[in-house]
Image 1 (cartoon, rainbow, N blue to C red):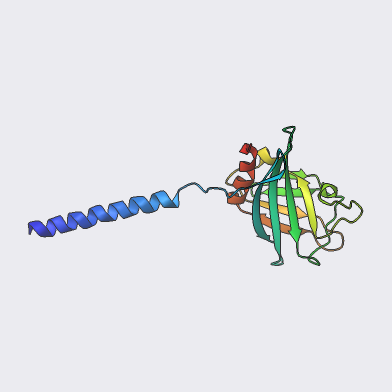
Image 2: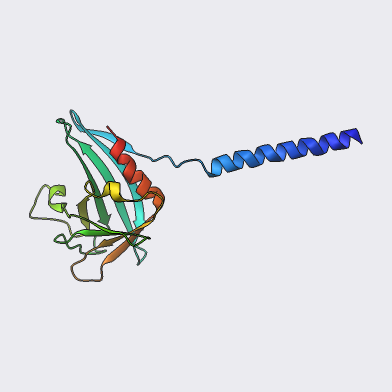
Length: 174
């Protein structure tokens, strides 16, 4: 009888250990995957890359990046790229970011900086200045990005709280 109670105690202890480990793994913080590149001597770029889906099921590449120039000036931009023919983005308008609580922010289109030939801006890609608004984004709250287009309804991209957290982590890169 004593061995039976010992067995039950061991099973209970083992179950508690498995439960504790499972809880710790489930609530462990998400670690951002930030890529680091040296673009030129003394110029570093840190990137967070994701694939986002629009309301039509099309994939868009989202690259949030921080560029630190040799003079230590830093910028944080968001580049959004769809497959050619997916949409014709309107570069004269800002990107609208709306969180699930209804807060709306805008990011200025700076796509001209993205292309070496300033007269040939690609219509399926855009770049936006996140620097002025990034710290206003709430961690833990999803976002909707509204991309203005030229000749079709605007494109909506949904951004998870984990991606928002990854974008905000760019501010700490040095």
